[in-house]
Length: 226
Image (cartoon, one colour):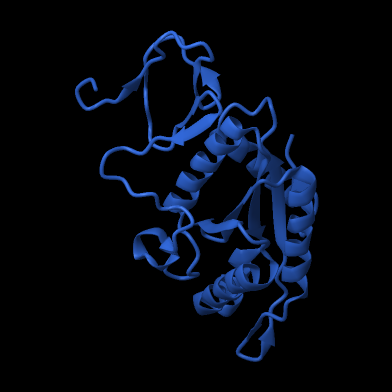
């Protein structure tokens, strides 16, 4: 311990010590959710006082939940993305990200009112959460009409198949507000944790770029980032 920092060093071990799949040559400062590999053992670092919050029913916690859609909020989904990225790198497993952006959502608000927009967001989130997402997926609202889905242990092909199910399911769903059917579609970007993707921010940018391609290519489609 050095002041408020916790540092890890390797004591000339035979197999070496790895942090986030990188061998350490000198003492390194540990950050929350860092994955430490010692021999065949993987450890996750949590600072003193932190609780393991993933997969433990924290959706009920207002601190981690978007109040409108009842899915995870931006802070939680980004924290989850960083943790899952580190886990996938350390364990050499697949990990993919989907970003979903509703098409022409401003038009819904302008034409039918913000109550209609709120209805669409809540209805879409419930549809995705209860009928489309596979077990183990982490679903959150990134902002406005933009949502993110984390898919641990899923490669690009599997994630793209899920994304197409999302696109098709949203397009076909009967969004009806005050007896009016609202045509709702989504542009979707998919990216995977490839070897050359260095951090979770780069992975996010790949998926975000794919969303832009989907929108510029005509919307209501799935594109993959590379």
